Image (cartoon, rainbow, N blue to C red; front, side, top):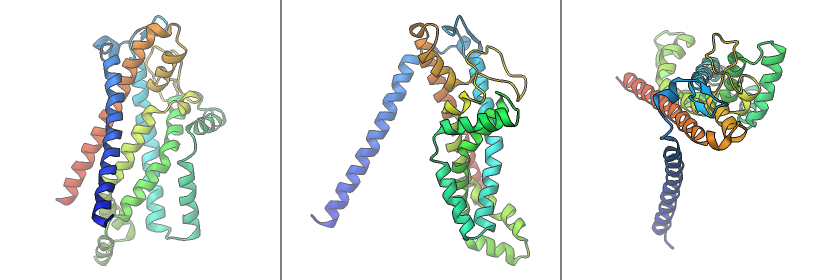
Length: 283
């Protein structure tokens, strides 16, 4: 078998695997749409659950999920970007930096349930935040912090060294070079970490189970120290331990569809932001 034939077989295999993954994704999405689209209505999206969550809507859970997404990103994104700037631009390649990178990689492989228990021990009990949006957001922020750090580091490394050299040669300080030259050039790629983080935060159940999620709370939060309902936990509850699982099953499919659409909407917004920044940087 010659090299050209081997290459064709490899490309065919990769295409087939890619199409298989896309097919599975479309099948899952189609299944959820088929079973959940009939439940979606204005009332479903704008009212609170009723009758043991077998009727009514999911509005409090939608609001709670959006609060947790925004809160976790406010906490994790600046911290992750600043950490990556330190390790990439200031700390060099010493043993300490290598150790930090190894620990960051290990942190990203820890099960989410461990983050939930840690968040309960630190934020809920030790710091006294209680079961609240603040505790849940910080726990979710810690969960996605490694992703943001690693993607930001790669984005900063992708910026040509000539950008830094030219800025320093013109008399700019290192801080000015990073803030005015390096970060704007890297930011379109940094948003990749933001997109991945939003997707993961939106669907996590274990961390919020111990820190913020309420079983049944048909009202909107009034502050960051309030408990909230959240779509992932709400979906788990009505699918496994509701008062009438069969009656609430269509609501479960509808909730799953809404959650997928929220994640898709957030990702599309972040992708649009990235493309807009890329165009702005090039111009």
